[in-house]
Image 1 (cartoon, rainbow, N blue to C red):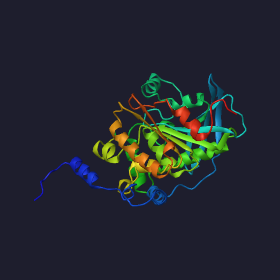
Image 2 (cartoon, rainbow, N blue to C red):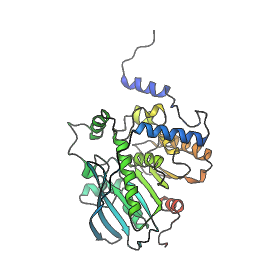
Image 3 (cartoon, rainbow, N blue to C red):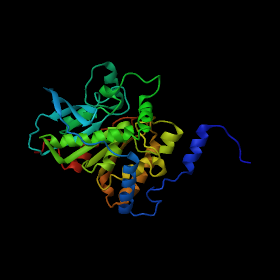
Image 4 (cartoon, helix red, strand yellow):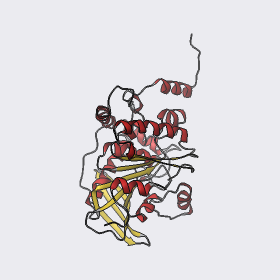
Length: 349
């Protein structure tokens, strides 16, 4: 008779340890090209059907000149019954000649949505988030010479429906509500990000061939998954995210309903998703003092992504920014990374 135990945590840990994702690169017997084709198809299948496209009908609600850039508030539609509010930061020297680069900058699982990432500080708590996590990377990259777009994810910022539902994480409640209809918040947010790329391609300043994406924590989740399925993202900076589901998710429960798809670990892990970005440029940022996603776990994720990039024949397109900080934007290599990946340097015409 096997040893009896009653812990669900021990049960989940054992199940995760025994599970080998069926499309794990290097374990499934496929070369890179065949693996990428089959794994991308499976990822899209797991996401489910994207919403029907609708006209963006983008509206610039204000445009003001600040010290370092022009700030705009833009709202556009992504499907029936859903719109996205965004901040857009435009370097003052940009010309409307469709030659300039843009970066889609995605916020994490914080209290204020897009605003701190865009450098909007309306309370001391906004500033505290910026100081703690170097969180205003959308504003920082605009100062470096990129048009940046900061949307609110579903359930965050202006898209948040009040306080937590009966003390529960609204991400989890939204996952349950959508799940019974076959609609998952992660898929819906990826759809919104694809529409953000559509919007960037309409901007008179932006070269559609020079669009990057970056995000921290949950924003890193959205960046990794979106870049995996959206080829118009030419480069992705994934900050503090890629590491094994079995560690941060199953063992520590450090995730929510906005960051998962049903059955995904049966097929692939987060580092396989990151590997799908190859052969395009990818940077992984990791803090050695990160207490949200442990550095040793992110290092494991990096090593697997590195294996995939080597198999793809583009090891030089995988960058790392390893810093001594905690759960934060390192900020040391992002400018150089996007300059190489997008073929643009600040101040160039």
